[in-house]
Amino acid sequence: MSKDKSAKIPTPQPVRGTQDMLGDFADRFAYVVETFERVRRLYGYKRIEVPVIEPTAVFARSLGETTDVVSKEMYSFEDRGGESITLRPEFTAGIARAYISNGWQQFAPLKVATHGPLFRYERPQKGRYRQFHQLDAEVLGSDSPLADAELLVFADQLLKELGVAEGVTLTLNTLGDAASRDAWRAALVEHFMGRKADLSEDSLARLDKNPLRILDSKDPRDRPIADSAPDIDAFLTNEAQDFFGAVTAGLDAAGVAWERNARLVRGLDYYRHTAFEFVTDRLGAQGTVLGGGRYDGLIENLGGPPTPAVGWAAGIERLAMLLADDLIDTRLDFVIALEDDGRLMFAMNALAALRNKGFATEIVATGSPRKRFDKAGKIPARALISIGTRDGEPYVNIRGDDELTISGSAIISAL
Ligand code: ATP
Ligand code: MG
Image (cartoon, rainbow, N blue to C red):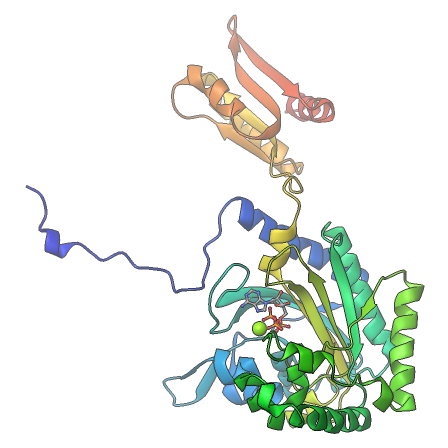
């Protein structure tokens, strides 16, 4: 008797904008993270972990009420205790909160790195998800332009080691210190006010609270107005100019190529001095792979002591998409075909010995013994070991990569 159809359990669907990963993309994702973990050690960045959930105020106060992230993209909810909680949309604010909560001022300047999931309620599309993942690096408690330069050299080396630097450009701008920025802001407001009638609705809304954002508007109506707006250069104080000069000199000394983009302002209100993005045209509209800047006012905004800081974040999915097709070798070192079940214990012993010596090894020991050799041959591995019996005698044969054949033979004959 067939079961009552109405009792069929509905299939759960994934949340829109989330991803399940297996195989190639999961390998690429892991490769990006592993490379980041290796390179951040070269630059002396400590590993840090911060919560996925934070009080909503951590982001609302630090990112600025008018940013896209705070006004439209946050996953906020009331928990059972009635507190407003937000799933982190970025790392920086949470790390700044942790710096204050734990009194990490004592470690300043503190160089930290982390990676993990972030959540933004955006329109899902290629390279844009609601749960996505970032690599993140921050230097807290340093007002030195050397910190900005080092952070950028770190980012540049990471992209080179991932093999994605080709076609990716570091674009750089300065947003000046508070005095430069205020003077520039006033000039921008004047410029935009004069052309108010031609601005998009979004930019009109920004005019009051965040006029800098109009500069990087993607709306074609805004582009001519944004392009003809004054650069910050005429408003930079000597200090701000020197700071920017020291950052670019540091990049030049380290051999890092960069381009000035005087329109680059970045989404968040808290940036000062350096702002930057590594951009590519290989990902369609989602062309920013890594972005960041200096956020000297943020920790103070959160109620902490005045603390200069600088950092960046990079989308892991976007980096994973850029990796070359043949970059990751997921092959095993050895695959063992057990051709005689009477030799199972010996094969298991060999399997354990090879793995203990650090060789990635799998065994094919189920199904018809006659078919196991062919089955094993289909598993991607650099060498194939067959274990069986010939003329009543134990038989081991290794073929494939020369070096592996030698080390495999030595390990197995020592058993
Ligand atoms: P975009 O202009 O693409 O919206 P953003 O300015 O919002 O980027 P940041 O907040 O600076 O991005 O985050 C840094 C990096 O994180 C981006 O450069 C990108 O690689 C990645 N990123 C941001 N939002 C998403 C998302 N929704 N899905 C996947 N990756 C993302
Ligand atoms: Mg965004």
